[in-house]
Length: 295
Image (cartoon, rainbow, N blue to C red; front, side):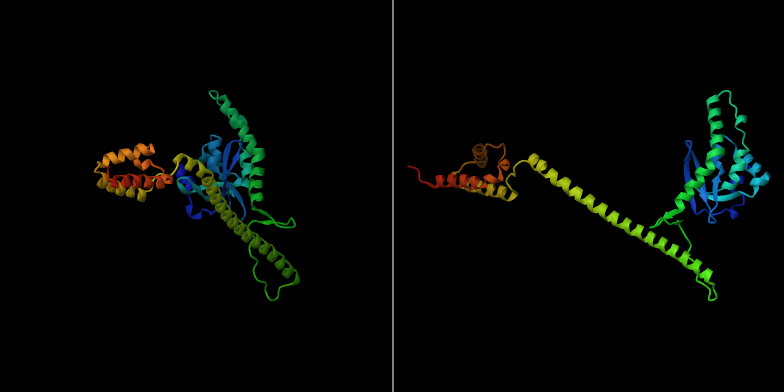
């Protein structure tokens, strides 16, 4: 029987987990799921890979053993290649199955260190893994409410009472209803607080960005230096150059050269905007001087 046949056999009977977890255990990943009825199951594929075991013989051994046969299930597992149906064993069956592995049978003369690692891992699976997996799922499902009460993470909403319900049934109903209502309130509060925290984080991020920009402004302005002539004033310079040319007969290039010398700049566009009044005054003096009659 091939790997695909064992992993995908009876896919129509595959169970849909309500949770899937990958738990790191002694530097190995254990992929486990929790079923709707609360059972925790270990997916055999990765356990076998970590122990260098072929999965198919182990599945057949589980099916032949009375203490584990009923604990073998097939579950839908999310993998990188998509959802696949794979054999898994419940925690109840995991212990007798893994206890059936004899670490002393692991031998590898070419790789003695690898053999020792696998022997140690088998012992760890036999002595620790079940408790680690159980605690992981159980602690995840618990929810502590004000007052220290602990309830399942997803309690079921109690069904409405029958008209002829006894006092004991009514008491149980209202206790379960209180637990469910507290859980709903806790879920709502978590979502609400989460939204508030997201909003606060966004605002803080924006403020930090604005503060960072405000802090950079002096440096940016320093690098840019003083403001040069605006485009409007540059156009006025051209206008005044034309007027001075008409008044003096000087070539416009000569006027530009005189202007640059007067303000000690390589180009007239480099004249500072703060000096604009001086520029206008320079042109005014030049034009008025040209209009005075020569003696």
